[in-house]
Length: 75
Image (cartoon, rainbow, N blue to C red; front, side):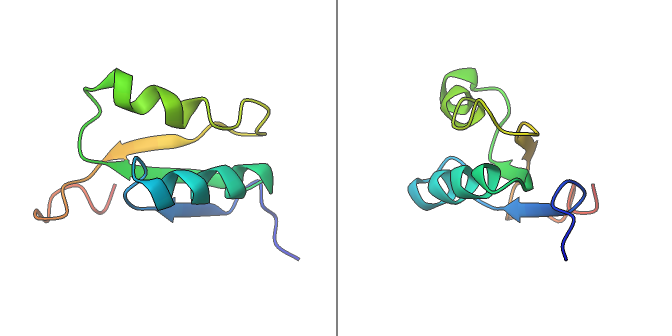
């Protein structure tokens, strides 16, 4: 059995149409979700993701990741 409270699912492209829906489904199912975004500076774009599943056991964690650079992937 998977302990969903400690498993982390990475969703790349969190602000995209598919990414947003995947994050919502995972949170509703009890998973901890980490989503990648191009920038953490645009709060207007990030707010809808943070509010997708207000009753989630754990809020989505958003991290900045530029797919064209090697920096940041280990974090």
